Amino acid sequence: MGKRAFLAALLVSLASGAAADTLNVVSWDGAYVKSQILGFIRPYEEATGTRVNVIQYAGGIDEVRSQSRAWNVSWDVVDLELFDAIRACNEGLLETIDRATLPAAPDGTPAADDFINRQVTPCGVANVAGSTIVSFRRDAFAKPPSSLEDFFDLSQYPGKRALRKSPQGNLEWALIADGVAHDNVYEVLDTEAGLTRAFAKLDELKSQLVWWQTGQQAVRLLETEQVAMSAVYSGRVAAAVERGEPLEIIWDHQVWYYDVWGIVKNGRNTKLAEDFVRFASSAESLAGQAKYIPYGPMRRSSMAMLDESLRERLPTSEAHLKTAVELNATWWSENLDRIAPRFERWLERPVMVPKSMPR
Image (cartoon, rainbow, N blue to C red; front, side, top):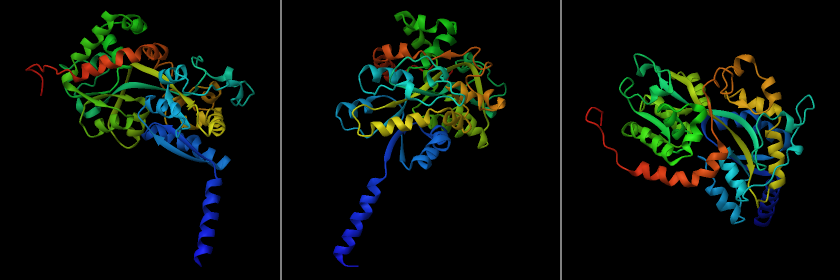
C-alpha cells in the first residue's frame, strides 16, 4: 500500500471510530462498580451502541467543580453521595433532571411516584440504598462482637479498627456509642458541645485506628488481617464472603444512605448523559444491579422484581432498619465545610497511647 493510500485508509478508520458515541461515567470501585457494569452498563452499550468509559473515584465534588467552572468537562455522569449532590446542585455544577422524563414502572406508574426517596435535590436521580456497617473477622475474637458499642470497646475486643477517612458516619457512631439515642443524633451533633463530645469519643479509638478512602481498601484491610474490625460498605462484605473470606456483619446502628446520578453542567454530552441516566434509573436496571450486590433499589417496582431472600439481605430490610441511622444528607450539605477542617485538624493531632495499649 502506498503512503497516500495508507493515510487515506487511516483517516477513514479514525473517522469511523469517532462516529461512535462515547460517555464517561464516574462511579466507585470494586464490587459496586462491577454491579453497575453487569447490571445495566453493558446492557446499555448493547442497546444503544454507545461506549461507556467507567472512571473510578473516591467521592467528593472538587473535580466536578473544577471541570464545570472551567467549561472543560470530561466527567459526563457521576454517581454522587446525596449530600455532595445537594452541594453541587446549590453551586450550579449539575444539570437539573426532570423526573417526568424518567421511565415509568412496568405497570405504568410514573417514575415520580415509583421512587422511594424524597426528592431533596432537582439535580439527582436516586439509584440504590447502601449502608456503612461494622464488619469483623470471625477468627479474630473468641466471643464475637454484636453491637456498635463493641466496636468502641478496646478492652473486651482488642485490635486495630478501620474507619473511612471522613467525618460523615463516624461522628454519628461516636455519639451513639457514647449513649445518644439514634433518633437524636443530629440534634446533638448540631451543637458545639455535641460535636466536641463526638470527637472525644473518637479519641478513645484513635491510637488503634487505620483509615481508608475506598470501599475496596476497607475490605482489603480485613482480608489481610491488618484490622480486626472495620467500617465497611455492607454490599462489599457479601462479595468478600463469596470469595471465602471469614467476615461477618454487625447491622446494629448501620448508617444507611442512597446515592444519586448527577450530570455535570457545561459538558458536551448532556443529551447523551440524560439518555444514560434514564436507562440506568429504570426499574429493570436497578433490579439488575441489586442481583450483583445486595443494595436496595430506590424504586418500588424494582424491589418487587427481587426474590424475597435477596430483599431480606438489603440494608433497607425491616430487620436491618430497626436501629439504623439515615445519613442526614441535607444536614451534611450545610455543615461539611464547617466540620471537615476540624476533622482534618483532629487527624493531625498526636494521640497519647496509654501504657496498657499496644503501640
